[in-house]
Structures are given as C-alpha cells and as structure tokens.
Length: 210
Length: 254
Image (tube, rainbow over all chains, first blue to last red; front, side, top):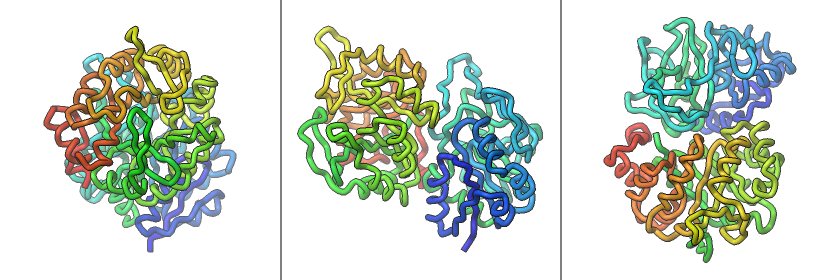
C-alpha cells in the first residue's frame, strides 16, 4: 500500500484531500512537525485561502525549512494554494516570499478577457486543461485524455519563469493560465484533483505511483 | 463552463421535495441520490436543510460526512448556519461552500466575517425570491414564509459587496412548478453582480436550463426533474451541449 504524508498547517481542504487518497487505498499520515515532513515517503501539500496567511502558518509551525529540504528528495504534490506556494513569491495582498522550489511568481488572474470582457473572479468551476509546449509523456498527466475537465477555485495563478515547468494550461478569457507544473519529482496543480470526480482520482492514483 | 447542480433538500434523514418549498414529500435516502447524481456526472451538489432555521440548527453534518466518502465533487451546504463556528463545522464535515440566508439577513456583517475567515469562494448567499405585484422581487427566508422587507436586486448587490462569492437564486414562485426558471429574475440579478449566479426553481425539462443560462445564470440547480427520474444529469448535459452551451464533456466525466 502506498504511504502518503499530508502537510497539515490548518489548510481547509486537508480532510477532503485525505479522503480522496484513502478512497484510493493509500495509507495517509498527517504531518504537523518538521520531523514528520522529513521522514515522509511522499508529500502532499494542500492549500486553500490566502498566500501570506498560509506562509505565516507554515513559519509558525517551523515547517518552511523542512519542506524545502524534503521536497527535492521525494514525490511532492502541491494543490491549489499549495502549488502556488511552491514558487518564489506572490503578489496576493502584499508581496510575500514562497518556498522557492520552482522559479516564478504568483499573480492575480487577468480581470479582462483578450477581447475586453470583464471576467468573473474568483475563477470557480470546471475547465479543460491542455499541454502547451511540454509533452505529458512520462509526467503526472500522462493518463489524462484530450477531453478532460478539472475543478478550479482561485483568484491568483502561478507564472512560471521556465517554460518547461508549465506542464498544462487552461483557457481563461483567451489567456493561457497555468493549470499544472512539474519538474522532476515536484508536481503541482492549480485545480483540485480531490474535487474533480473520476478524472481527479486518476491523477491522485498516478501520483501514488510516482 | 456552466455547472449542473443537483439540489437535495433535506428534512431529518430524508431527501424531500415540495412545491414552492412547501408540502414536502419524502423521496428517499439522500446519500443514494447524491451518489447516483455524482455517477451521472453532476458538476457539484447542493444540500439544503429545509427545516434547519425553524429549529435553529443544521442536521446535515452526518449526511455530508457520509457523502464525501464516495463523492468527489464540490458540495455546498445550507440551512440553519448562523455563525462562523457553524460554518466551520459544516466545512470540516466535508462541505466546500456554505450557503446562508436567514442569518445573513439578520446580520449582514456575518457575510464579511465568513468571507474573511474562509474566503469569498466559500460563501454562497441563498436568496428566496417572491415576485410582487409591482414587478419587483422581495427576499424571503424559511422556505418563503418569512418576509425580510428587502428588495432582491438591492440585497444581492449589498451581499456581494460584503463578500458573498456566489448567489443561489431560488424563485419560490417557480419552485417545484416545472414551468421553467424565472428568467427576468435571473437577468435582474446577474446584471448587478459579477459573481456566479446559480438559478434554482422551476426546471421541468432540460431546455429550461438552457434558457436560464442564456438569461445570465452560471449554474443551474435542479431537483424535481432528477428526483422523479424525468431526466438524468447526463441527459440534461447533452441538451445543453447541443444548444451550444459550454459544459463538461461526457467523455471527461467517466
């Protein structure tokens, strides 16, 4: 049975992520200390809410250094805000440094479409993801069909510095917005696989097999 | 993409359905229906405790805990949520969003408190609208029984300014009537807010959903049509697709 450790720093979606992993037969452990993070086989980093507050929660629990140290050594998946926090910094409310596991910035979603219409923000709902330049072969998304849909809830997005880190994008009023990132063992998705029906569960299963 | 949202009104342990939110009839076990709609490809689920505000509590926690073991789509829960602490309990049981009506009318600041605590995306304002002789809609609570004295269009604009991230817009007049949604109401509300609007009340056939989206709805709540087996989520989705609406494709669901 695959073992997976969820990093608990008070994020709202932790229990739903846990239930999805358990549904797939994974043995879930909850890490609240640096020692538990460092001892994990594979790490999942969930997140819902605001970037500065979440980083402060990580610092208060002394988890920042442990995640930085552990992440390069094992399969690591950030979800939603968890993915955004993998980057260098965020513009949400005040400029706040992230974990810096990947180069890039977290920015507000564009408020207008390419044709000038006002966009609904937060972006909430299902969207189809697609590769942009980077092949999905041998990545987390290898099993994702061309016709797909995943569930998003967010107002900010990650702008990758290195194009090859941007594994998938979705269309937002004509803008191609980061939907998933991957570099070696580090993966992240802006959408919620734990809320994306059967397609989301397949992705979680794929992560358990990395 | 627009969202198709089965609405499950709950009384005690049972899924129920009424007409104009009254005359509630027992349908069955909510978890069995939730699971069925999930498998049919529902984009989200909506649980509303039909009698919670009468008793001042929400009895959905146990039902939600059971549902989320096997249903992996977003779930909104409403009915009897009076405080940030109530909302936290519902969210901890597995819900993704909470819908509030009575408590928000009584104390609009609660909307802001909840948005600041959980984020706007978590806070759904539930509005029960009844059309008046002068053509306006007034907001009601307690299944259309209690008058709030608030104009619906003004109230939703105020609620969004306070932090509501979505509007669940129920036409009490149309609810359970199978004659289609109140399209004028949808237009009036979606014109004044830039957050998603879920149209609820009146779906008799799939094309009614298409009309609601064309009037400005971002999501369609449906109950009667599904509970009595007159159509399925997949059937409604196909009609939406053929009518040119952006929906999650059936291939993406399986």
